[in-house]
Length: 212
Image: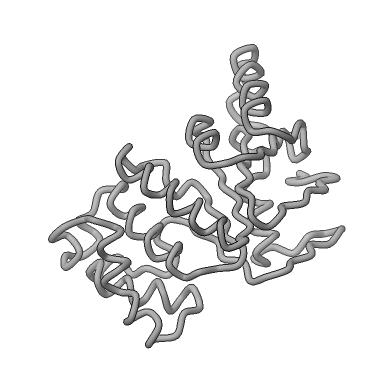
């Protein structure tokens, strides 16, 4: 199976690009290739900056409290201990999960866990931020703050790529979009036009997973 084939995309600084497509389209594979977790069998990835892949709970220990995982997650993302400690209260305030911050994360709902993971990752100050389905479980109030945080990051010339099955979330956060289908770029351009074509395609087909 070729997870990706003939994919050539530029992700400019100061822009949020939404990456959409069905299950098996190659979205997560592309992010893992960009960040260096996977090595492409052909072709090259050129980066101008340090990438950080945000997936729910990356670097977290589920037996520890949220407060402890702020430290652990920050260290796993490449922050120095002093830097994490200086930002700890700011991160906790942004996550806004109340007294649960001092309870083991095994007691968290998926939304609470995602909020904490997002708060940690977006305070790392990465030059390239890759967000993989990390906001799918968030409530509407937190999503608005998350969108605002993403835009703030873009104001300092960050390149941001957001993967989500929610076309509404992609439209809200992104200015550009790339539609992957069976490992290939089916369409790219203005987010509204791409998501509209994607939704029309889904309405006309019954494909639940993509396999070449």
